[in-house]
Image 1 (tube, helix red, strand yellow):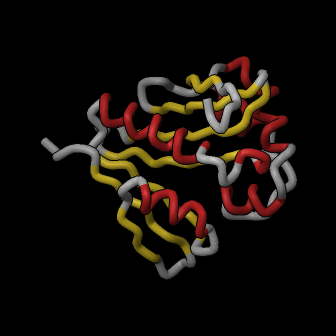
Image 2 (cartoon, helix red, strand yellow):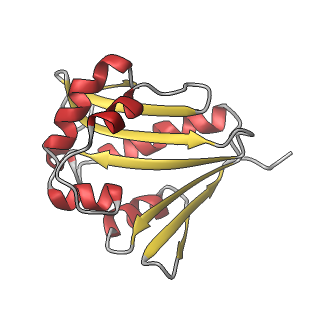
Length: 160
């Protein structure tokens, strides 16, 4: 439940392809640019298939659904040694600034912590102040890079 609205948060499934396609199709060009670091009108089918048919041993994607429609997604891909996971987050325009991004990020962090992942990292554009603020509030360290991006890093465990 978020702001009085019922949401189902669960791992993505292969049959979520149409939902994910609709989710990206309804995203604003600005939101897609912040998510994929380039202007694009749509996400190709091959990419959608890869995003829905994940390797649960090394990847996890949680989706938030409201009445069967996707409201947000957060995903992580772990390296083979489970030391580092790179994450990405997207929230539908209607759900932005309502706490869904934090809910999804917290769920992903808890999942990665439970599986023993050492560190979560991410990258966002410098202009994505909302993501930088969200990451900072979630405990990530923030560092700028020369290429106009911001590096986000959160240590979850001490390496063996």
